[in-house]
Length: 208
Image (cartoon, rainbow, N blue to C red):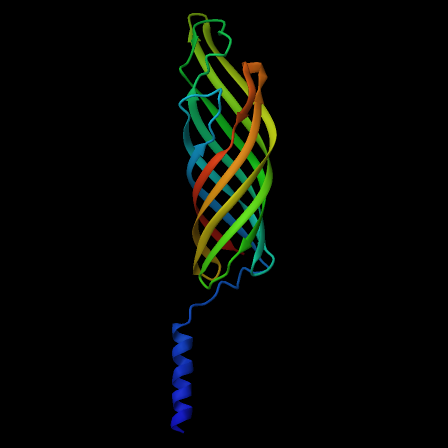
């Protein structure tokens, strides 16, 4: 009798203190959103590069406890000195600062190390990106703009950790390293421009 009561109390204590594992999103689609810092890769054609922001959002599917895939829209923006190699505008001078805006669609395969509420993960993927170089000038004859796009494949590696606040809701942090080689020959930027960079994102995920 006493042994039965002791076993019952021990079992109840384990049930009370056990942390629910995030199994609800296995076999489910989820939405993911991340925003944070972006540090652009350095390029020989550019000087004083300054990353402004990085954003990633999209949908994922968790096939098993350890494997998931995601399709995300990626957006990043940087400011830089207008390269001296640009041909002179029709009037005035180029503004001292230019911009490089990158956006694209990326697919990622993730391997998840499941440990209850805490889930570290690593991922790798490929995407298609459009990098847009832009600068303007102001002169007595009006304003002019120099814009050029480059469409290219890119590859990335990622690592992060999620913490489940509920079975279907998780917050986390992710580091992502993206490599994209762009080209802007019409703007006088010879050679390959490294348009990717490193992201540090605060992320939220919800399964449905």
